[in-house]
Amino acid sequence: LFGSGTILNEVVRAQAILQDRYEIDCDVWSVTSYSELCRDAMAATRWNRLHPGEKPRKSYLERVLDGARGPFIASSDNVRLVPDQIRQWMPGDYVVLGTDGFGRSDTRRVLRRHFEIDAECVAYATLEALSRQGAFAADKLPQVLIDLGIDLGEKAFRQRVVPGGREYVGIPNAKILGVPLTEQDVGQFSLPLTAYTTSYFLTARLAARRMV
Image (cartoon, rainbow, N blue to C red; front, side):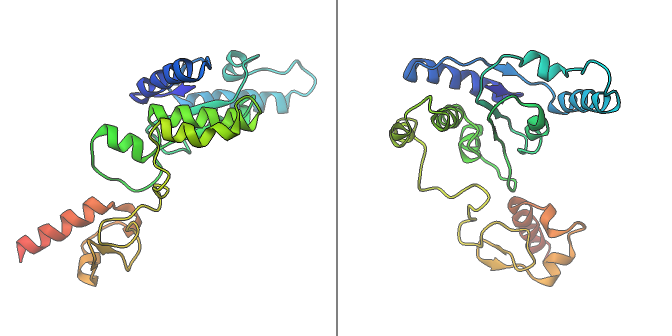
């Protein structure tokens, strides 16, 4: 299990869930920089490509994971592209959990569940990956979802809606709480609409109404 930043605490909690409830032991790795791991691995790959007659070099990632058994589950509060940088050099099945989607405000606990990066979601992702390898019974997964309190009825976080409005803003005909954005609204933004979050749009609209 790979954890980064504050989400490392969730990964450690997932480790305990897996051991206590399902008798599955996992190692926890603290990843301080996926970018540095990627740069080091790319450098080793380049050296090997340009020195075909010499003993191949191994990156730090390949050395420390030598002999490690997957699956490997990475959880962080970055978008998934950040941990995904090292996928090429992972020695087994690699599952990445992250905070893809538009910005929003809520408590840490709620946001971590919303983006499916909390301990329970990490534990479930581990069990699901193990089931694909035949190391955990797939027919137990539905009960695991219930036991861990993971809501099957929720949409993927990229598709969740603003109450009363369209599914996530960032398009010219977007609505804020059911009210369409006007050309005047759009004109006040200096960046493309895709660069702004729902909360920013709502704040801007309220500020404009106060000015009037």
